[in-house]
Image (cartoon, rainbow, N blue to C red; front, side, top):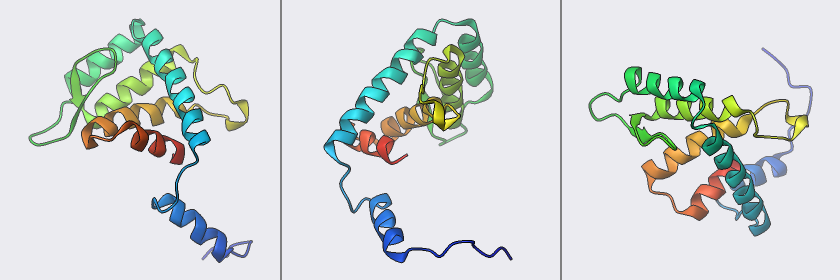
Length: 141
């Protein structure tokens, strides 16, 4: 068994849990900032749509990642075709990553925007989320 090297702060945990479970409002400034970041990543997705690697990936998703009977499907951005939700998310995340113009914040050491935005677009459509709900989900991810 691994023993934690720190003592948990119960009050801090409760505040984080309440926020994560939707009991606290995301500040308006944070939602506006997320909207700017979302537009930036969608611009990268649009710019990458015509790249050969993205076309190949989207075709692969159509050919090999179709939903089963009753399975959730999603429309791939800037393509219009549908694949299983995981297949569409993967294809669009790959498309965004091909251009590699997203997530310019170096301390993150990664490019989470391509996966998060692709998943958000598919989930928001599937769950019929409002714009505010989608931005809140983005802020919380």
